[in-house]
Image (cartoon, rainbow, N blue to C red):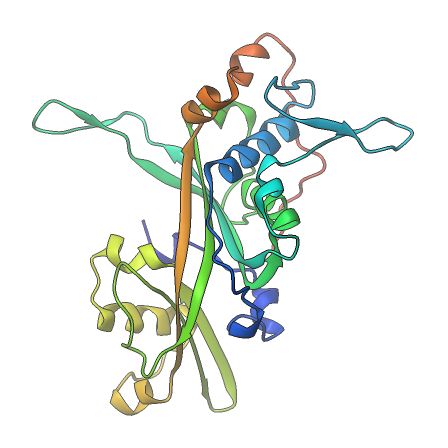
Length: 278
């Protein structure tokens, strides 16, 4: 998997210059929870199969004349009213067939299926829903997720926390920190980020990661010590939770896929068109 495919950020959060303002990060420590991941699956299932209303889902009528139902996220109850932070939602799909080890055991491997997030703080009460659906249906690198894929999916919610300015572009720890770099060359502004797990999963040193991130930002010129000295670097950490569909079924107590197997499955998601400007 290419490191470019490991994560995408919402360009609006960078264009508006809000990506590294540590004052916008709440003082209280926020953590991703399994309930957030469960909510993402709730949203996906309901979007793909509106006829299904899971027993574990908490629905309330929104008061409209059409009686449309809206999910109420249980994780919201444990959040401070002002809770906000940058976040990413990632969908992965289980690879088939499973990878076999020499020991005879099989390992589950997953491939990226969609990932979109923001580097600007967003209210978690609404942002988890926004990016769960956007990453599932509007990541321009992939076709929208369809119903037949649901049992093979895994979702991850990453909250980006503990932003700190680096003294230099190598002032961070592989496997602990994600990084955002910003620099200007010939009046052109460049910026890019890697989430905390990227460098570790790719087997990179700090030097390799920074060089790759500079290229990801779109800069094709020479990279030397003088150039590296001008880079503004911010490090952050990630609170991350993952949940497979199998785990979701265990938490819910019902398998939506089995429950609607004999029902008519929507063949086209008319409300979700490919979005090429994210």
